[in-house]
Length: 187
Image 1 (cartoon, rainbow, N blue to C red):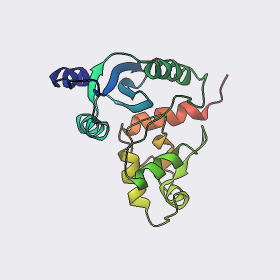
Image 2: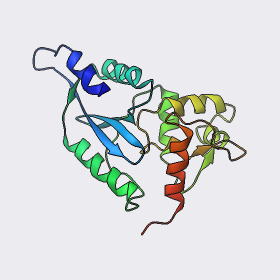
Image 3: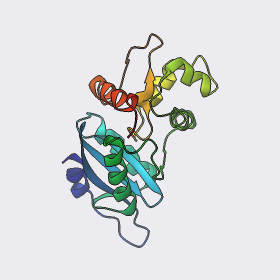
Image 4: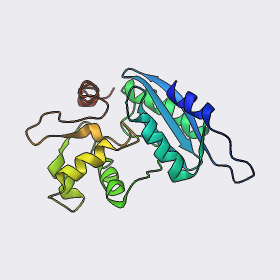
């Protein structure tokens, strides 16, 4: 387990100001995912086999001045339950609090992703227009690739202008699975 290995290699901070990112793994139909949460909400949900996972985790540790600790908290328990409901087609919207940590542009792009309705897609160009910069198509694609909260911040709902499933950091097959899951009606 990558996160568990990383967490055990960190020397804990001393004193009362110690900050923790609680981490756990979640088994999904798309494979294992690593999740992390701080006291304010979920800050990580990513596929365990992504090569950049260690980099994403290091950025989170630096951003929050925190160490990883394998375990549970109420946000992670809620996340597990809501993900199970999502994959069982019993949930369209997630209600766990999120803590987005990126540049101003990235945060804006990620917030806009959350406005794409379940079962619908947008193009990278449409997303760029929504964030107020129609020429920022590549910047939007880069922000989406750096999204640390897969599925809940639904970058899988963004497609190329011709409808192709261009780019998905978790793999095109996962993007197709998620879009297929969402295209069929609930209940």
